Image (cartoon, rainbow, N blue to C red; front, side, top):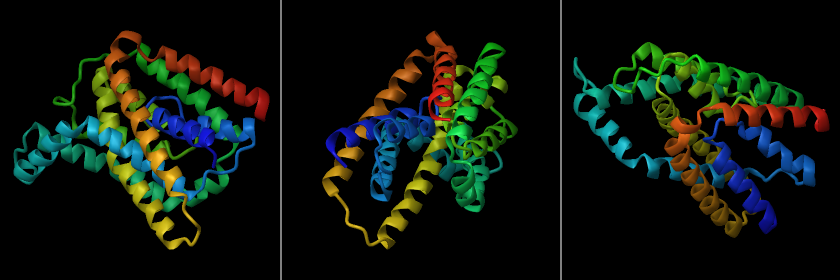
Length: 265
């Protein structure tokens, strides 16, 4: 991989991991536009490490409170707000985790096509817009129920279909359930941590078992760039989401999906 490829792919991964615009739709474009080959398993691990570092650094205080609340009150009859939210994140992760283990290879083989990515980019983009228009915006993370968390968790499972966008579908579900925009995004980002950690762990295991040579300079640069771009993305998304709403992302997804249909199908 040359320097331009590393920068472009790492920035794309960092931004699209958390913006509701589909990472699959963006990562397929460079290969189609420039003829770039697959970045390989090692680089895939690197950008996962970068995005994981970004979200954990940004939410470090939340993570500390969740772990402390879970350890101290999570196993009592009346857990505190942090202990309860920790359970919600853990339980809501299970559907996508199980589906990924059971169906991941099948989805990768049968659904990772330009047509599927274009269709899901458009369809779930429209759904995101509808959820934002009819949202109630009364629920925060303290008043969220276990059932709400599980519904968002099952929505996250749908994101295994390429083009859906993990953050997009979980924010959509949260808005339909009445969560405030910022709270919907915060829960979506917290929910991403166990999945990114699991996906990165599995890919790391595959990398250890592989015998291919590793370009450590490319990996270190990929980690750094994806981490910085992901942190910036999280910071500004949460800062401006109440002001701008979801429509800019909906319009962008419709344009992106339309471009995929017109030029690559």
